[in-house]
Length: 289
Length: 289
Image 1 (cartoon, each protein chain N blue to C red):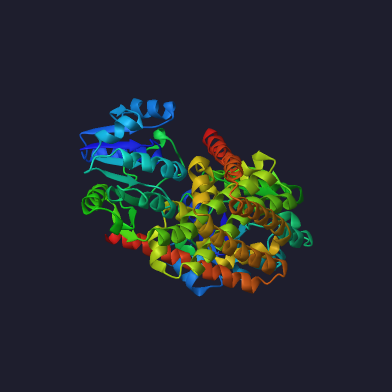
Image 2: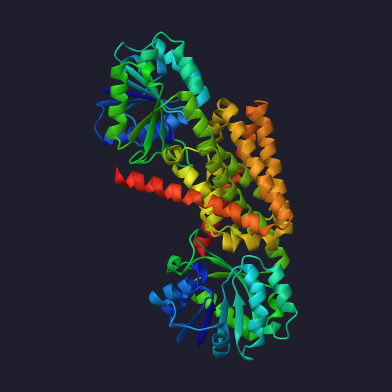
């Protein structure tokens, strides 16, 4: 099988590593409109060769689109225009509704599978690609009834070979949940970073007072704006709902602190503690598999 | 040296482990008003014996108060009432101004050293105590000019033996910085946990969509309300300032998302990215020491 990967960042690059490691392809072609990314990817042998999109797509049995979600919407029709009948195209973006809508209008819709592998780090670029990134993680396939069976099969084979569990969702449902669970935590972290930077003019103090707790909460503020700005834009409706709920709860905390209602603050935190049980459950479920 | 530790939670317990490991005490006496905590601490040999505060304090050369900050304010005068002339009393609370004010009114103020070792995890209780918790971390000593030299020396010897770097601050200054860097991140995390729990009625979805990013951002929401409610209460003035700044920035994000000003969102995130450089600097500084 020949695999073409469009976008050689953390996700595209880590997919390349895993595909090579599992010997799923006889040839991996990389596409990236950043010359530096393309050179880096080739230098560390993420891919066998670099080509432009016009060459890479018709050659491939499997095309993976791993670029920011705004670019996915632009690239996807072009890719679907020039594939072979038996090729599969998957995207790995963090929003799904808009991308699926774009695909729905294309006569090769059936060759496309909309996916979201839930994996990543706060780092980006080909040099951030790591081995085993997808192992034991979850991948979501959206609107699977719109894809040809062979394309679904191909996609599932890929993710399962990488050690992933697969679940199915409607693209709309995916975007709602992703807003609350994933995207809201990115905004909360970006905003925390911003606020602390604004106020702590004395950087030395941040150095010194930053315990592991702060580092953990603010970690996502290091994420790529190129990736996340388009996600926030494409999922704005759900994200605004999530943000409103978050701000409302912060204002409740603020009011209780102002009024010195320590018992009520205690109770709110006790409620929030429940997230630990759920995350623990998550870990247990994953371990069981 | 005989050490009495009042409060056998994560911090008190981990101090006990380190003090024993470094052979700093010939006897460690534990005090805890929870019978379960006292029994657990004894069972895993964190301490050599359990005593009440009236017995434990006069016996000890070094008394460590490691209880929630509201209780510290109540216990500290009682402890200072019954110490020997040559004893040192330290507290390890996350707020310092109120505790120092309480101490300032006592005739044995000089025997007291106000400290804040920046170390912890989201877990609590004696069974959460871990070895090496303080190694390579920072401890802050507040208002050191109000402590006797021998008490400062004793305190510095303790923290240095544990592998900590020590810096000095005014208690007021400490509380301001701690609000922005440490306490704000706890509130942001508690609120994130609360918001996601409220909206994601279907717990299964949280299980499934929770990537490592969400888990990292929400980790502090598992922290102890017993410890944190009194901190928020005692540092309410600074914390409200920090919360206001945070909410203002969230509202800015929200407005930009509403208006689809993706370029401005991108720029805000780019600014926030700078926190990575600072945290990295922090790590480098720590590694250099």
